Figure (cartoon, each protein chain N blue to C red):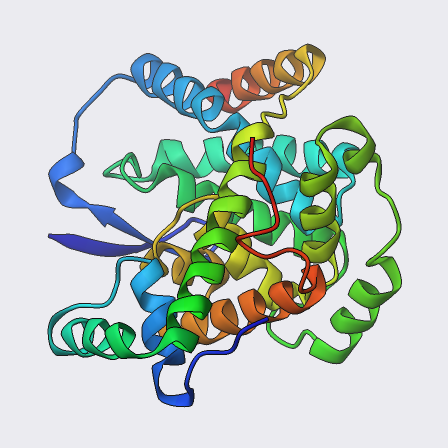
Length: 205
Length: 81
């Protein structure tokens, strides 16, 4: 059984599994939130880094802000968003990122976002230099060249392994739109990676 | 890049996400058995998904210790409010 809750800021909705309802002390809540935050630290940073076009410092700022805002909301939510913690936090990170970059997520101009993506597509990012082999770097650059709306769907479903429903909540779009952006994003990625990036020619170690 | 047949594109994407069920799943399997082009498109998309997953698995970024310390301090403030 699920319910849809509105957070205290009235900005986001999140599905919560009512079977997860647990009555606990504030100390236990704090401890549980801290444990979940550390458990999903890498995923949150990966997601934020993709939103920040590879800038790890900006991504850390966004995740830190989101964890402060998230904790405030978490204390007020009953039941706690345990089962959906990751998707719930990604949603908050997305809001923080849009607010920080001055974008109005409801009226974002897709052409503008495409232009930004194109201008930074082939530029090496600090993230590229920090981690990864040649294949990883090619994939990360190709990802950055995707329009943001497509990139985020590919990142959430293919990299972070969220399902369509969770991705729809994080992005604030219907699941049908998730599917179409995902398939367009994948096709565009294949195009960007080129014919040499085929199943038969790349060796994956 | 091999494009699948026009009518099976959406099915192939949903299949690699384990979201294709019932009649459409059976239809796609039947179609794949006789269509090398769609089989190739499916293999390429499965490979792309695996590549993306591998990239994510190799990235384990962490927040710096001073950021965690700052977070604990902020959470303390929230607890006191």
